[in-house]
Length: 301
Image (cartoon, rainbow, N blue to C red):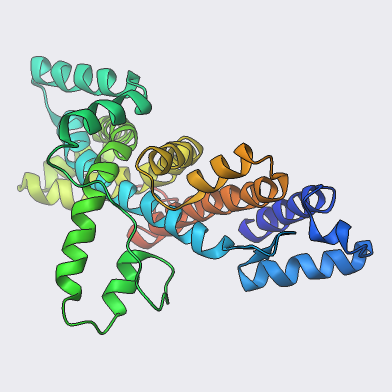
């Protein structure tokens, strides 16, 4: 399914590129088949060449945005899983209401407003330079390039990069964290009412064993694929973060292309956005299977 979606997006992107006024395929009077072959050759190389001779780093830009999305999802899971489990099992109504109210208030705030307020408060004391150039670039992302580099001070550079990424990741993880809290608490609450959990309470003496062996394995894996349904919003928020924090990625790429009316780059960005969304969805499905392969089978104690 993933490969089929990528193939469909590639065909749509090629059609947009072929009929774009900034396309090198039209200027060179290439036939449809020759242009089709040249397009996919450049796609496999991860770079596209414009009419001006400028090279568009498709693969590098895609990996930079994908890195920020993955880090935000990781932070969202670290925050959302414990709070969601607590809300699903807790009977303290006033505390549950406070957490839900705070989550709704944060979720309703536009991400642009949050970024502007945070930058206004912290810009005098917090560095927001986020573009690290590690030469030569092997993995395409700053953190992976630093990890596999042979530099003596690479750990210091990694901590500096995490320091610069802290604010964007935290802001970007707000909405996924709230979605995680809501989905996990709902699944935990529904699973705890099932008959096999009631039987486990009778047979098991330790509440921790009930939680670890029966409740979490049957509630958490079902949540992970549901989190990937909101990847479109996550990608849009990531692009907004990249624009506001002046970070290299799909956000700046699309903004500059729209400003210069370069529809060739915009058509390539459609393929890039679809690829990121498909990769995040596929990663969520694989993670759910790895965590608990038997989640589709009948519940038993």
